Length: 172
Image (cartoon, rainbow, N blue to C red; front, side):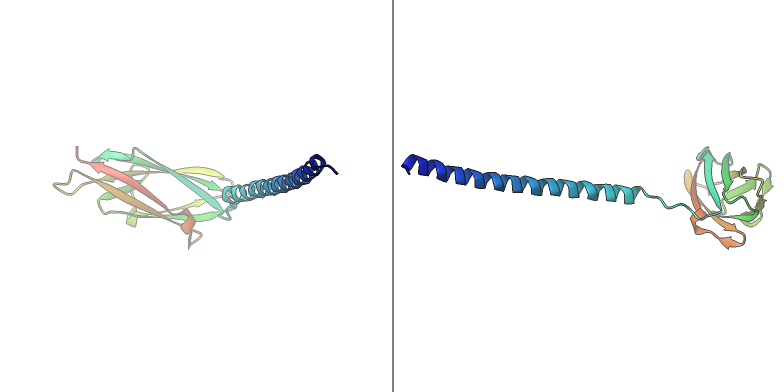
């Protein structure tokens, strides 16, 4: 065998070996990419999964406006959805500053900041409206008051339905 043939044969063996190494590396990269894609899909699915609620009612709220002048009313509306469509005794307990007055509707001042009502199977959705009026201590230009709503459903406190709402009251 000539020197040229030996060199070509050696070069051919080395290039075949390089090709095998390259294919092996490409295979590992492909496996790695597939594994990363699978992990991303699992993580996205886990993060975006929201378990369904077992709560029999759902409550959302709006406060309009959230900033008022002293002794000016703000409208606090709760939208209640009766998910399981059975009768429920509901109690709203408002924990807040003594400087805030909460009225059922516009005229009935809540006694001890507690409001009771019953939601029936025939009432899937309903709204409850309250009026909130705030006052300020002398020499205070404004204050941000916290209204913490605790919900009792059929005489049981339901922490998942608790809400904290903020009302800012400013001097005129």
